[in-house]
Length: 363
Length: 129
View 1: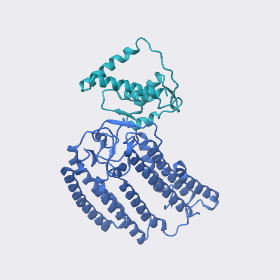
View 2: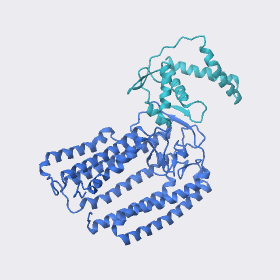
View 3: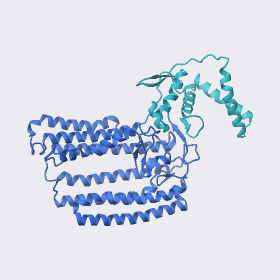
View 4: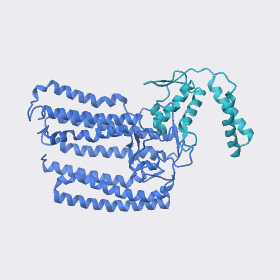
């Protein structure tokens, strides 16, 4: 078990509380951040959200969100009281479940007003989309940094002792190997996401101003993913190379992640899902359909409004219906590989620790 | 821009093949140029990649494309084929059906004729600059 000083624990607890509040705030504003003809992950007529029924559903959703968030906070506070600060990490999960219940109930109320979306699909044959900021040179940066870090450790391997407490940074050769592999797997997962945002996303609009806004949104998401990659690499390099002083890294990293997340959310919220909030200023449409466009995915393929599963769709990434950014098409095997890399790779050191492969890993 | 209607009675691969053929006839793609990959087009249309591959195969059989493994679909130099005795017959039936639909929707025979001649001239004009 990792023993942390009380001030570090408090920092982590406060930051996780901040995450929970941020999540609740995001859920509060989310119905207004999605595309105009999507409401609580259901395709509706573009003006529905401003109609009395739409407004009434939103009011009830927000009221329920307050009630469920309040209950979640009570459960969180009680948990911390009974189980100690260690329970704080469950705070965000409780808040997420509470917000999801409010969303699910609102979605059920919107479903009777669902409108059939247009079945027209468009494709630009001559498009050259530069989605990744800085191109593949910028995207390869984290791998170069990690390789440089590995090279340095290899040169100084004589200083790393086979037992616990070797140098640098008190990590053993086993620990460093596992940690490097884990970081490389995380980076590979994120690079696949970057590639996917460039090649495996279906544009909702193939032309017109909507297309320009959509590309801007996609570039912003790519920039955030790239930022995450650099953060992961810098953290890994720090952990492996810089000698540990107390738990400086653990304490300092969590608030940094919180600020990064906050900036990313504000950036995306300003654009709106798929750049739809910029579109609100210029109501020019390139589509010829009179039916709602939505995100050009049929409602029936969205499970609970959040999981997209469509075998006939070759796209790996689709726009989230209730959220900012992109979701995976779980019918594609590539989606599962990406998910596995991103979710399981960070847990490799934990598994290694649990299986006694690394008896004193402590990272 | 290529547009298809998933709700149409015409099969999706036919719509894609028809749309691409119109692009090729109009000369928007020059010989040697690459078409988007099967996967890219399938993602853009939200259909299975086999559907797009079928459309590409049809155009390759007509002599418009050369399909190379790992290199995608490349536009071929294609001479105008000689008009055979049954060439016009193949077009008469679908053309009659299209005209009938236009008349049923209230368009006049003159406006339909004008539209068809203009469409043919537009394609022809771009095909032979």
